[in-house]
Length: 149
Image (cartoon, rainbow, N blue to C red):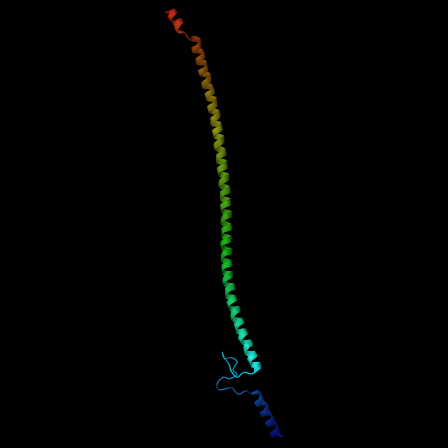
């Protein structure tokens, strides 16, 4: 009876153990296996597709990382540009306000100077007018001068 169990165990083990080929037949891990059964061929094709898909995924991941880097760079530059535009707008606004107040002050100064000059001109015109009236009052015509001499 023990012999039967031993024989039966050896037969069962021999069914599960696969003899490896000296030439690599049936090796699914090689690049070009040969001597495959139909199910092994399907498994090999599936492994091949999985490796191809993994390679594509790796390539796409690298491309996505590259694009992410480019987008981050562009985003950073855009943020800096927006900040610079805001700074320039503030400076421009401040410069405009300063320039406007300077112009207003200049205009006020010019108005005051013009008013002073207008008053001086009026005074001079009044004096000149008085002098002309005095000259006219004292004016002697040539005929009168001849008759007096």
